[in-house]
Structure formats: C-alpha cells, structure tokens
Length: 96
Image (cartoon, rainbow, N blue to C red; front, side, top):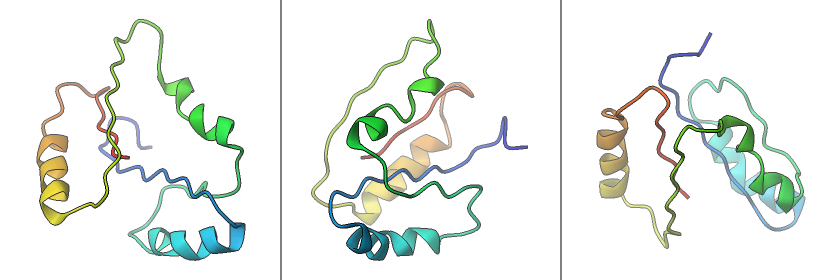
C-alpha cells in the first residue's frame, strides 16, 4: 500500500524511565495519521539494529551523522527541500 510512496518515518529513542518516555513522546503520536506506531520499550542493541533489514547487500549504503543540539525551522525547511529531490526511490534522509 505504501510502496513507492514518500513517507515520513519518525524513529525515536528515549533513555530514561518508561513513564517519562511515554510523556515526552506523546506529542509524536498526535502528528497526522500514522501508518504504524512501534514506540515501546526496546533494548539499546535492538534499537541500533532496527533498520538493518532495509540495507540490502550491494545497495551502496552511505551513512553520515551528527547530533543536533537544537532543531530549527530553517533546518526543517532544508530537509524538506532536499527530501523532495532525492535521487532514487531507494534514497532516504535520516535526521538524528
């Protein structure tokens, strides 16, 4: 149903008490109409491996990362602009 469609995936990790995490992440559950909601307790090693199944051998995967201290409107606009012009259907942009 969603194959070939552009989607926004919000994957989060909260390191703290489960009840505090539920409170902190509740606003994410109020965004739009989610296709799925898999927010729940997971071991950290499971989180690290969560997207490994999407990385098919030979697909020339490249990762670069940076942890942001803040997330501004200008940054969001930049990601939206580049997200609209990804070079292939298999391309993605991950924000951490």
